[in-house]
Each structure stands twice: as C-alpha cells, then as structure tokens.
Image (cartoon, rainbow, N blue to C red; front, side):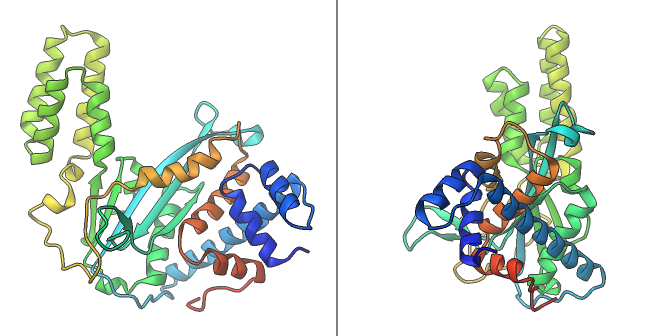
Length: 328
C-alpha cells in the first residue's frame, strides 16, 4: 500500500542502516510514517520475491532455456563467506551459534575510474548472496552467467576463492580455472609462520611454483621449533592448506597453460582480489546486528546484492510489479 518510489528508498537505506534508523529517516524526510517493523516487512517481502526470481532463473537454466547474447572472452568470479550470529530456531545446525552467508560476484574485467586514473573498478558487476547449499550456489552462479552472456564465446571463467570446498564445488569444466586468493594465502602464511624471513622465502617460492622448496622449508621449521606441539600443528595446517589448493596457488596470469584472449576495448585483465571489499559492504551492514534469523539475513543479503549491481531501481520496480526478465 505504499508507492514504488518509497519502497525503493526504504530498501536502499536498509542496505546501509538499521531498520530503526531507516524508519526515522523515512519519517523525517517524507510525509509517510513507517515503523521499524514496517521497514522489516518491506525488506522481507522484496527479499522473498528476489529469492523466487532466483529459483525461476535456476529452473530456466536447468531446462536450458537461458541464452544470453553478450559475448565476452573471459569472466571473473569471486566468492567468500560471512559468518553471522544466529538467533532462536536459526541457531539449529549452526557452528558455535553462527552460520556462513555465501557471497559471490561476477564481472568482465577492470577499467580505469576515469581517464588517466591509477585506480580501477570492476566492469558490469553482478552480485548474489544467501544461505544456500554448495550446489545451489553453483547453479545460481551458472544461471546468472547464462542469462546475460553467450556461454559458447567464453574461453575462460576465472574463479578466485579462499579454498573453501563450497566455492570450488562443481568448478571443473575445461573453461573454469580456480585461483587461490592471494590475500588468504598470504594471511595463512603470516598466521602460521612466526619468522618473517621464512615467510618471505616461502611466499616467493609459492609464487614461482617452487612447491618442493616451500614444503622443505616448512618441514625444517618443524624441527627448528623443537617439536613444540602448537607450532608443529600450525605448520602442518599451513602445509595441508597449500596442498589442498596447490592447483590454484600460482595466479592465473602466470600459468603457462593459459593463453588469455585479448581483452575487449577499454577493459584490462588484472589480478583478482576484490572480494574482501565486497564482503565489507555486507559486513558493514549485517555485522552491526547482535543476531539474525536465517530468513531475515537471507532476504536482506539479496537486496544488498541487487544494490551492488547496475539497475537497482529497475530491478526493484520489477520485483514490486511482479514482472520477470524478458529473457525468461
């Protein structure tokens, strides 16, 4: 019973503020009065509709009904998780009261923020999020690509992740290349190796693909620490992490078996690692709450993901009106 423009503003503010803050802001700057519960209702309704739209998209993908027409030679994909504290019944099946919200982005490459700029931004970013199983997340990722792009023209899909099994799930086609996120690899080395010089050597060897040297050094460090259980455990954990993701340690641009096609005009292929900034967008809003219901967090995350891409206003208008994409 409220206007589409007001719904859009409520949803836009809800991506950055608490529901109480949105209630005050809307009430102060419009002639509409809405309670924080009313704001919550709007978010749940829109988030629920987006979830249904995603289900339709996945079903169309399963039935091979999606045929995007945009041709790109390379697509970049990144994924990560955000652990949120659960409340009530949502704590069931959680890990220490927390559940991991799955987040993902797709983009075509990088372009300069403005001519002559040293800063870059991703091109045509699409984001998606929610509480999903690994296979559901992979299907949504594939469906989002098939809806927009001509998949026959994609030579490579480069996936950047921290090595979590749900990120790599089903990512095994010839066109799909996995890369272990350099930030997470560096973080693991720093966390588990105390000696700074040893860190530098190991990171250099890993970057160059000299894995035997890296593993030999880790083994030497186990003896140097005098067999102390805690230190040996940390070094063993690092060794296992590297071995589990050894196929993705070398960044995609430095691999001899990958011949990258020429990038479209105005686009560059750079090093991946934008996911931390994307996770921060969700964390800034969602970590502020003490706890979430799974449904509440799921619905809000879908609105935040919509806002991160292009055409937020048009997408919200479509959700409100009940219209679906012309391609469907």
